[in-house]
Image (cartoon, rainbow, N blue to C red; front, side):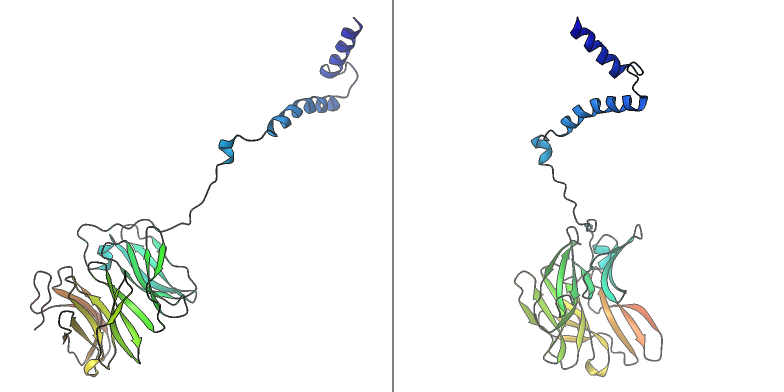
Length: 290
């Protein structure tokens, strides 16, 4: 009886406010301690193995996949499904940006402190080739746009720029300054072997590979004038396409069939515009200049 009476008195003190003349604040504190103690023990238990193995990795944001359409053409915008790649100087640095045709969204693609410029889409729209000064000299690089993986494809000391893909995506044509002159070169991307394809004392630059894969259009100062030329990769012959002493042409771009060339024109008397020219003897996507 004595033990039961003692327990009853303790329980009244703990759970009946005023029975032991305990202030309400102190009574609430006692109740809180009694409740919090088991919870603290529960939270201190080790987590199951299934929770301990969970690791969350945040991937670096990359541009969305850019898919080529079956009707992919030699035009950079059409090849990449309506996405234009270009270089822009901002805050003292040249970087490469993408501009989508449908949404008008502008996406910065490169962030290296070295200048990046001259982007060119691969025929399947998966890669961009471009020139960069990120390694202390001007070299050529490729980027896979779905993963952001960058590959350096040249490692020489002389200047290289303005890459242009072959239709099969295996070669790059580009301008290179070596031995005191600016000429055109072609590079086997897989093996890294390069070959010089022009040898004139005047500068040759801005190459554009034809859809048939057998010709390269380019700009040159041959004949003391800036004209467009066509180089045949079959016999190394060169033909002057424009022959306009009163204006300068540049930035040749082939039509998908190879029948036309679009290019820029700057008149020496002032003014500039873009135009296109049909190629003599061109048919079925083949250019056969006489």
